[in-house]
Image 1 (cartoon, one colour):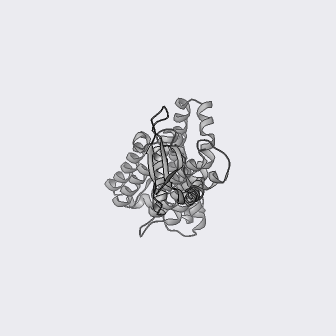
Image 2: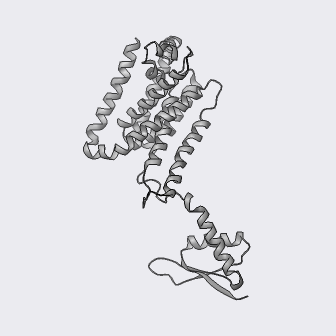
Image 3: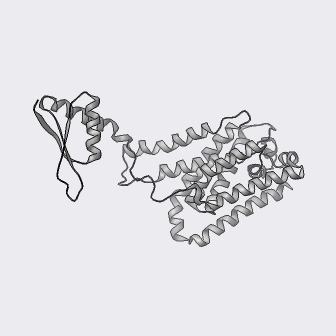
Length: 302
């Protein structure tokens, strides 16, 4: 059977893909290696002459159906690591120390009643509870789960933003989530835990990925469809981490949406802020502001 060239001088990766497409359609194909040049190894694809038109059609159909869903090759312009965020470990240590101290002093129940988030008390003006509730946990399992959540979601946010601005972003997301949750729940049930802020971190990461322009950015349909992927991925993760008998699912949902909102406001200006202000000045200032807000909330509840 006479073979004819259907593609010439393609890369190894593209040749493998074309061979796979043709094989899935039952079209016999052969590859011939060309002499290597400066651009690397190149290959020709050959198919039986009687299958040329069908092979062209199948390969063109594959690329047409998949062109809107190919994600950019360059996922991150720089490394974002959970293990390169000392600020996250400080937060984890603070939450662990608070829980252990409450247990040792036998005041855990009193602290939950005094500082836990409740729509009834928040509606009466005790808005500090939306902040202080983030520091309290019901038991060891609840605590360990949220410590893992901080490492998975919050640490990358801090690594991306900075130890000061990242902490402030998480505090805003967690507080906003608790306030919105209290507005929609008119009851006295107490809600505690850092999970609202953790889901806020997931929402902020989704906003970052959606707003980050890909290489060769153009405002077209491909961009619009690809930008929705991080949001749905983050929402799926939120659902997976919202399992449990005593989980406040609505707080997780509002935390995720609050983080997405604050991330959408913050990240477009993040690079401008970095260029305008020195990180050596802005990060300590943001950290001091976060500690001031946290300290004021605790003081208001004493």
